[in-house]
Amino acid sequence: MTERIVVVGAALLDAGRLLAARRSAPAELAGRWELPGGKVETGERPEDALVRELREELGVETEAVERVPGEWPLRSPYVLQVWTARLCPGSAAPRPLQDHDDLRWLTPDELWDVAWLDQDVAAVREIETLAVLPGWA
Ligand SMILES: Nc1nc2c([nH]c(=O)n2[C@H]2C[C@H](O)[C@@H](COP(=O)(O)OP(=O)(O)OP(=O)(O)O)O2)c(=O)[nH]1
Image (cartoon, rainbow, N blue to C red; front, side, top):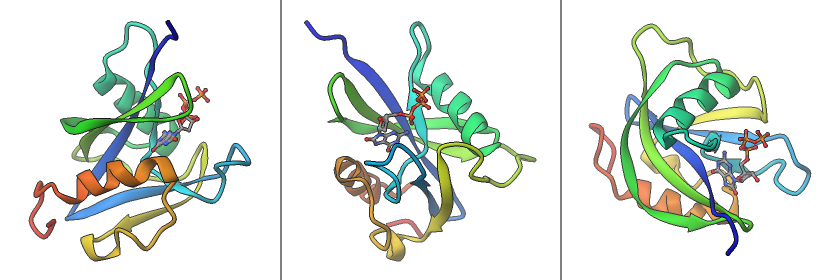
């Protein structure tokens, strides 16, 4: 059986807005928007992978809050799972340090203004249904 590897994506929420990140590589994904995150390493908790990846990619300190229900297939053997997350007090603002060349904080009204990766659309729809912050509907 093929090994299944979890990619953890962050629904990083702040002041009622969701952070979207534009990929700079690889070529087939560049220019499309995703939830920042990355592969969970062997023996690592997905929540810990999320905190590690956001620190590496965006220079922020975060905490995972709760799992967004669902799991979405990516290129085999990867599957996408998503957690909501928030910035820790005193964290720097996110910067595109690695893997991304642009970031946007999206209000609920702006959620579909960016070209999400095809495989992220169902996950973003699920995030859209969460009422986790004031103003988020
Ligand atoms: N981070 C992230 N990756 C996604 C999403 N949707 C999606 O198809 N992917 C794909 C892109 C990559 O092929 C894979 C995750 O790779 P990555 O490059 O973000 O992860 P990583 O930092 O752990 O990778 P690596 O350079 O250490 O190999 O999942 C998403 O929303 N977030």
